[in-house]
Length: 219
Image (cartoon, rainbow, N blue to C red; front, side, top):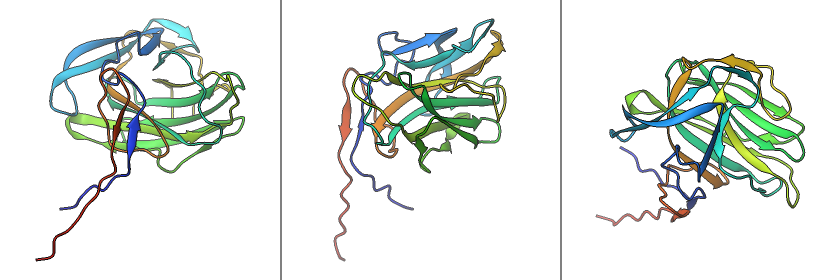
């Protein structure tokens, strides 16, 4: 047995549990809908992310509204995901204003990070992970830093990619042909400054979890 001793963490996403709510998450050239599939918490409530019949480089689910994140400071973004029909997917951390990006590619069959692609500068931390969970789920995360300045438009985007080594543009986008047969399951997102911590539920506002303090009483 062991104890998980975690630092303080804050999930900055005000509503991290409803990925189909357009107030908090934007989906383009795809649909996100609530379905009765067991999620990592053993509840019959997950989100199906299903792609459209299209050929495009502009396809994603991402946080609604862009923001400016601190220059050179690691930001960590994560999603829970379950394999549906495509093997490879990615999360990109983007600065639209400078056309810089950091992308991590995940293999949902073998449960590994298969590639990291940096365009125009930036860095990716070793804390980017794919973690195996129950009910066939993974938690995928990117921990990365980009240069930025006041007013820059930045975001995190998730989508399918065609292979472990896709041809991406400077914003981490791949032109690909998809169909409604392409899908996966998603659940619960998290955005925090610094390294990744365990999931912190939110329902209307950002939530901070205090640092764990462990004491041992001598026998």
